[in-house]
Length: 337
Image (tube, rainbow, N blue to C red):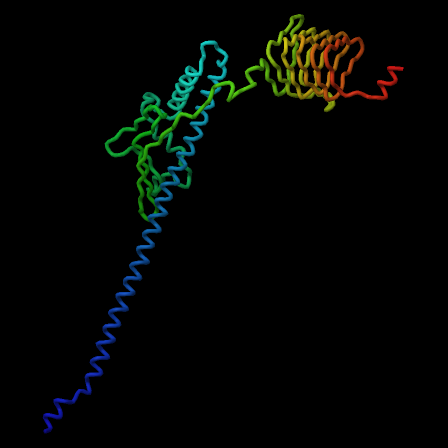
């Protein structure tokens, strides 16, 4: 009987179950902690690698920004060169477009191409666009470096769309030894330019003179004939009240052609035996008119003056057609009486 009773005695099993449960929970806790730690480490690695990639992209964006300025400069130079020959009889729109593209390519190759071989781009020139915060430092081995892709050349290719910087590779390494590599081709497209007069420059080509700071004619006894419209801005010759845009002196003589227009933000001044004459149906827009002794002003057509006409001494003035200007009513009455 005693032996049977001992075999059914299980009072120690509770301790075994507690120990097993604690061990199982401990294992689960360790697993959870390990997974959490691994997740934190993975997020840290991802953040650092993402930051590194963004730094590489930022360095590439700085290169793109610098190239945009090169494109703008090349397009401006080509456009001005084409427009300077716009009125040439053989200079049709197709010729303008091809000339513009040729000059555009030439300017970009001059800037970006290698000195002795403009069919390949200059890597050092592109690296200069990378800012100080991303530039490669040899002492630390960090920063952005430009090379070509393995086994490929720095080809600078002309296509129907523009110029292509091919096989460019940028690698960026940070202080934690993370490295990102960006392989790309950069296309410098031809700008869309419309050289048709009716849509791009409707009135400018009708002007033979455009001078924002005014025009001063001092040509002796010769006559200057204006066979196009004239814009003369404004400049000051002393006090602020003496506003001149078109000034004639020293026996200078100016003739404004048939149906042409002179516009000036300042005054039209004639002095020192100078003369200004307009053909029929010409138009004058001015701030004021000033005619001094021994000078002559003869206007035919329409004259619009925001201030008034001032005649000094023996100045000779002839007005035909229409004249619109400011006057003093009291002075006009006195002269009429």
